[in-house]
Image (cartoon, rainbow, N blue to C red):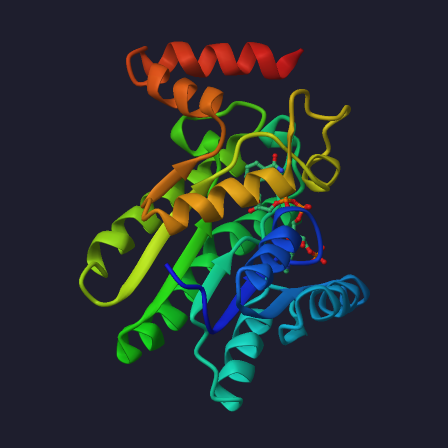
Length: 256
Ligand SMILES: NC(=O)c1ccc[n+]([C@@H]2O[C@H](COP(=O)([O-])OP(=O)(O)OC[C@H]3O[C@@H](n4cnc5c(N)ncnc54)[C@H](OP(=O)(O)O)[C@@H]3O)[C@@H](O)[C@H]2O)c1
């Protein structure tokens, strides 16, 4: 496939989103990078322009608010831009007993991981369908496949992303718009710190490698890509074991 046109990448100020923006520019896309931290986005766009010569602009948006999502969409409409690629990557987690999370933390997780991703997929997807071309890459997680005690709300939001994105992919098949779901495993980024992990996640892969493999999978036509052979094997293996048993095992591992 040939990469061309404009990619809107959410959560581009760090981790996987930053890598999606850089690597999609390297493959031939102009970039619109969105997140809350303007200084990070500006530095990223400067770097992309210097490294690749592609156009790169940033939009500051708090996507955990309806206003932030609508302002981003209105800005695209005002400029007459329908992105060729939408990467719904912005997301956050919370690690700990669900009953101990503050209401605003849970609300932010649900609004960002679920509501913003849904609204952007459907609003931009609608415009892509009208044009007859486009691609949506939604970032779920390998944890989307099973309940995850001490990561309960986060894992549930990612189960939503996986289910919604795979259903949307089927609905839009034949429309010229592809939907691809990416399921990273543990990846080195700011995620664990924001989520409240006490220590770094062991055996984490680099964001650069995860995104390179994910974009390669997208290129080869994958509908859903689970990053890392061990994560893919774990998801497959868990299908043959009672769900309650897997959930208990995750609870025991997460409590340590
Ligand atoms: N790292 C992992 O182990 C892992 C595993 C599976 C799936 N994932 C998923 O991968 C995606 C990227 O995570 P990451 O690992 O790259 O984490 P990260 O380094 O913490 O990046 C998260 C990104 O989301 C943005 N973001 C957070 N809250 C936002 C808000 N309210 N509005 C707009 N943007 C917001 C952050 O930017 P600002 O703070 O500047 O707004 C940042 O750019 C997430 O969806 C995550 O759930 C991560």
